[in-house]
Amino acid sequence: MTKRIPTKRNPKNQLYIKTISMGIFWDLLQQDELDKQQAQADSVEDRVAILETELENTRVLLRKTLEALETHLNKDIDGDGVTG
Ligand SMILES: [Ca+2]
Image (tube, rainbow, N blue to C red; front, side, top):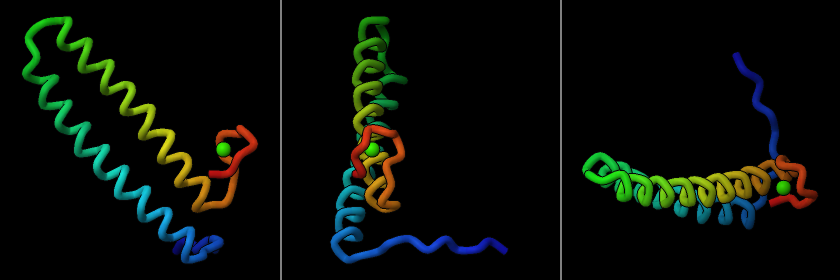
């Protein structure tokens, strides 16, 4: 049995997390669409262009996820001195 770790919760924080979660959900849907395009792309140029878009989207999604996690835990995870 795992022990639950208490986290600092407040309504404002929860709303923020909910909003960020929806953004992340849409980002994942967009990623799925890019995956389909990637599977259908014929030329190397097309594939590279799709991969570049995917990389940028992944970076944005990683940043949003990290910010949401830092806000939720109220902790600076990436060491930039800022929480959230
Ligand atoms: Ca940080």
